[in-house]
Length: 138
Image 1 (cartoon, rainbow, N blue to C red):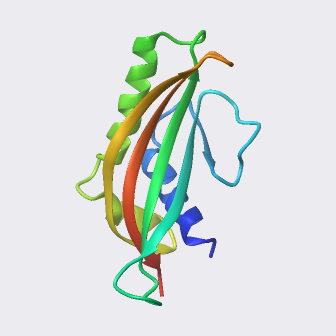
Image 2: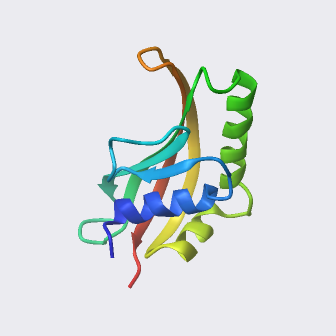
């Protein structure tokens, strides 16, 4: 099994993998990404329910990147809405992530979104932040 963080990242990518025309990356690949892409990053913030329980609270981010000169703002926003829709296609994101990974996800909730423009390479970026509670499957 990969680390709990990588499993959560893979679960998030699996949840939105139905969105076509994107490349998908986990935090293990920080460079050389093909635009447009979505990257997933998860990090453990604390252990829940006491020490040595193996239940972890995590912050996770899905970042959607697209070249500003290759797509209109409306096209960028439309693809972002498709990504958000992938998180809500079923009634329970946590169950979907549990079924597709080696972790048990107890809770997964979207907590915000952040739009940015990176002028150095003319890209639009939107981040979706999530709070997730998970443990390794036994």
